[in-house]
Image (cartoon, rainbow, N blue to C red; front, side, top):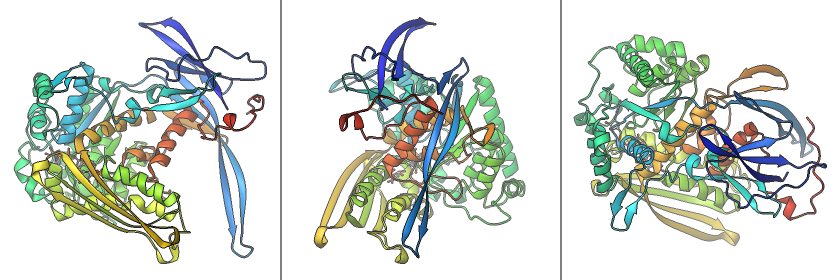
Length: 563
Ligand SMILES: NC(=O)c1ccc[n+]([C@@H]2O[C@H](COP(=O)([O-])OP(=O)(O)OC[C@H]3O[C@@H](n4cnc5c(N)ncnc54)[C@H](O)[C@@H]3O)[C@@H](O)[C@H]2O)c1
Ligand SMILES: O=P([O-])([O-])O[C@@H]1[C@@H](O)[C@H](O)[C@@H](O)[C@H](O)[C@@H]1O
């Protein structure tokens, strides 16, 4: 339904806040002054007028009717019966953003030092010189900071777009308090210098602030990351039992939260890729088994298992930015029993992000993708760690499964009975010279009309940390937001949170973790719509269906909204 943006400025608190009133037109409504441009500035806030969105000091509450098709396929009659179903949700979002910190595991790494430096540069508006002239910090590549959402159209038929972070109250990255652990003792200036990601001039501007930041000692069990990482391990918790390690990390979290007077702390793994752990009954298939295995000092409990347990037991969301299977069934069970959010796996930053668009394009265009070869080489420490077979295997899995949902959705091209799917090869090589500037080369071959062949070859220079860092910011911001959203339904009037496995984060991850028994979606723009549509429903804004019937038909008079 079209909405009209109306801008009125009111004085409030410290700054003038313009309220963009989104009026749902009804029969007796007068048309209102159109917005004078199609882009709503970042310091505006929106207000949906109408009976279905209620604003109080504490909450934004919205009613939403969720419609689904229930399908029954009758193979005898060769008929598909479709039963449309409607479900009422009442979403409630706390308006007050929490004082939030993130504790990065692997803080001294390329991603950790880069995201930290970038937030300081943006927060303190640090500029630096380059041969092209003065450079300004930004948050490009961040969904929450650098993208917009189409709201509707104004009376002139112009599209009205709002900044993504306007749709609901969100944490600002400049306000995120950062800390964390690393097995290496380098301070954040030394880590930034070692990473070779930022311009030298920027590094010098950041030096005094980054020098003061030092990762907490961490847990190192040599069996889980490549042997070539051993020389980095000089900043360790004194050797003890895994139970001691768990308690030490829990205490670190409590101390960080207290020192910085935080309401929310998110624990995010951006440390090295570990090998997969065995998932065994009696070891880690339930929360109870997991805690008992830690108490028993079981070898198969990994550092990332310890961090995830510590986070959950401290009621902190845990996000896995790497591909290993940290989130074993025992971790999921522990998170669900403690109503704590977990998410993962493996930031979807460059080569795979593009793959999740290209495969969607080809298959949904009816072109039969037959072969995908994804090669890349990189020269950072991540690449060094991935040069070991077990760590590479973790990454190969997360990079390979990204096509499954798109291929599985088209049984006309791929015969499910024989599990038909494209050839798919992933190659990663360690070439120190290129450092963090990963070079990805892909070839996509598809069968096309009348058995022709189409070949797409891509060379993609992915500056790994400059692509991953904005994802870390978005993972923190969206996770903090989700901790403020609850809902009731037409058959349950008790407010509840979303499922502990936070699959809304899928857009940011290569191998999305989803609640048990639910589908994994990798297609990038389906993942994107999932986020924008859920947040639109919580804000009481009509979803953008892309139908634009107002431009294709004679739009009738708006109806009064009935619930
Ligand atoms: N584009 C990207 O950069 C990208 C994309 C997807 C996933 N990832 C994953 O993110 C992770 C970090 O990438 P990076 O480029 O920053 O790697 P990096 O090697 O520069 O940083 C990892 C850091 O983790 C530290 N570390 C290792 N084990 C630890 C432990 N048990 N506790 C605390 N610290 C520990 C290391 O000392 C190192 O400083 C890797 O697993 C990588 O596969 C990166
Ligand atoms: O996200 P993406 O560019 O497809 O995948 C990347 C890999 O290709 C790269 O080898 C690895 O270093 C990064 O951690 C990242 O996982």
